[in-house]
Image (cartoon, rainbow, N blue to C red):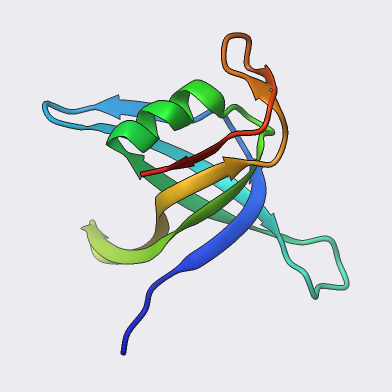
Length: 116
């Protein structure tokens, strides 16, 4: 049996970036996740991707500094740039939950759980 699922809690490092294609909406953001068992204060920076309705909601609710729980699947890939091969790791979000309150009209604090 194979199962690909991850749960991350962290803060957005910048405002989400929204891309519209002919058939889809894509929102990307970067999540800073603290390492639990590190003597030094260290964080991992994880690229998160949301699609369609989840992407639209993320674009409306999230902003730099938002604390959020993301549940999704790890995706890896690679691409060639010049003579070097580059590897990517990102999380395809299935749902997210704001861990602070945000009023949708003003983007001020509220608690919201959203899934794809």
